[in-house]
Length: 284
Length: 284
Image 1 (spheres, chains in turn purple, orange):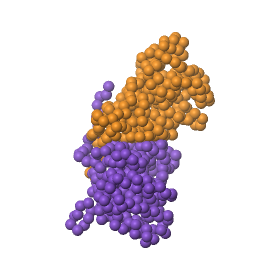
Image 2 (cartoon, rainbow over the protein chains, first blue to last red):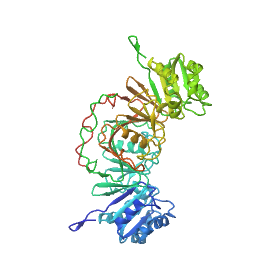
Image 3 (cartoon, each protein chain N blue to C red):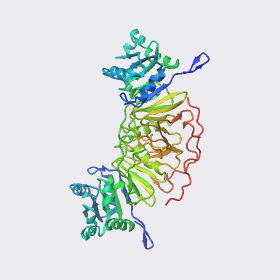
Image 4 (cartoon, each protein chain N blue to C red):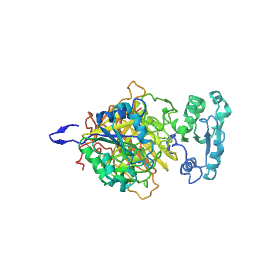
């Protein structure tokens, strides 16, 4: 958190692909704790229909990582978001951590409510917002809700909804390689290549601040850039039709890599105009 | 099959991602039958440790598609490849269809034997060679043998072997989206981007002839072009390290698409030097 005169910059986002290590090195949870620097963390279990057990699991996982002030925020329905007791849970929070479940529960239950407003204020004031699995998906403006795993994208598979929009112009997917979600992310990006597709593996996270993110954890982060796509059949009518989409640019990132969202480039790698071999070399 | 003077061009390859429809429209098996034009088809069940049942299944599936002369070729071990009776099975064949199992069984049992030689001769003389699943993988010069499914590629996951090499400069993977094999194909291509990675979904096939292929079937074919890759960590030492690889060019193809292997481009799409947005437009 840096001060720019009297105005604070927004805090970091830690976007986790689900299944983060809670028993071993806990690289990702350790990063969450580091950013909190001893401050209060609110565990928002809103995504879950049955939140029992989540809080205890994270309490144990965070126990020796320097987080002493961990409190739970759960709302059963939208009516509860008006409950002053619920809002009070967020008071003085240095960060909010959204656990997994159904991202549509997060957006439908707290979207456009005072709770969401408080989460935004915490972020704008320099606080940390973290989310895993469903809590990762809801970070983007356009959110993948359902969609097939373990198969290629069919034109009719459209399941998107407005997310909380803490990060713009990206669509985030999680449990990515583990659940075979490449197809649906290509399909999502085909709808409008302005959106950069970001697929995050389990036990893997991006730490996003100031328009750049660093990758941490054991898996990969896939960035799907559709800006150069020369053809796609996404606007075709037949819903059972498999996707066709030429000239996707794809980056496979892992721990230690940094990506610049504004430039849409891995950091420290220059823009390339001719990096794709145009003249086919003579191949044996 | 076209005659060029007295010299015949090699026949088509039909490379199937496994799980081809055997009961309904049978788009792929129908294409196999069409190329045979009533000729004899040899079903090579070599990939299987227990080939019982394969022949009967294909006999039923092909029954009303105009293939009346279907015979099985199985070799238990390399010694059997010298058996004149086995070689006689291939006599007069218009095509050979390799069923699924373990691709390493195909290459290790018939690689560099008279059987393989006869298969090549049939192909060179204009005959059809088809293969599904393991039978698809063995088509390429370098063959993926094992490797993780449903997770990202780790540097130590190297399991390649020499295939039959009926098609060069490509690495073929199958059951592709269904088993989440993107990671391992990216890893394979990272080893040497000369090889174009081709991932084929179930019930999907490419029909390859004269350096081009058409896609048929219900799923997608993914072409992974590493020629423009600007960075990869594949040569790193630590085997548990997740892959990092920037600027992959990826094509998602489906039924009706044609790809030109020599140009490494979808057919009828010009070479693009500046198709990837270099100047980032101002995004909202």
